[in-house]
Image (cartoon, rainbow, N blue to C red; front, side, top):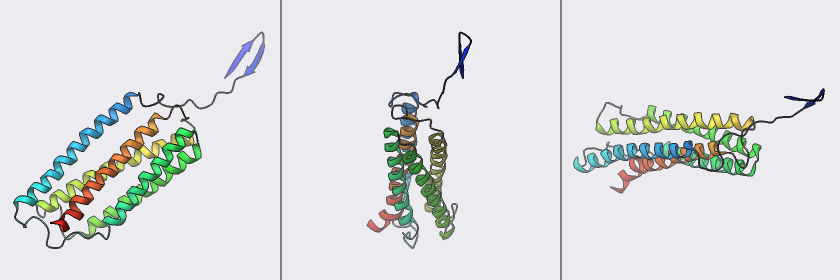
Length: 205
């Protein structure tokens, strides 16, 4: 960009324009909270269906062999670590550290992809299908819906990662990072409820 004054040309350096409004007072913030409440209700209804059917089927609802923790336990740990990585990345955004922000997002992206890969392996390892019985239907619908949310979260993290590399955030304007982080933490919390429902509660019964 150039400015002309009395025949002289002066070069003006313009950096990347920060993205998002300062703080959390953006429409995106409230929109994300509304989305989370809506999706949380959906998962709540689905898991209520699981407990309702388990309660009224007099022991005939669960599969003969209780679910193994071979895949689900490490998958849970991976997702929790990814949430820590996103939290660390958000702290980097607040400090104005582009490297910490991009690094944390990159770690979360990698761990999220690993989570999805392990989840697919577990699906293939199951002795039942989505149309085998009510338990199989609820298992694949709930875990499949969660997988779709993880995929959306990875797309959000990837966009934030690219914007971070381009220098679109600073300590005052990083609302998109906070909004994306809240969504990713929500995905992790939902998985914890799914993990308890399918992998822990059968042993408690």
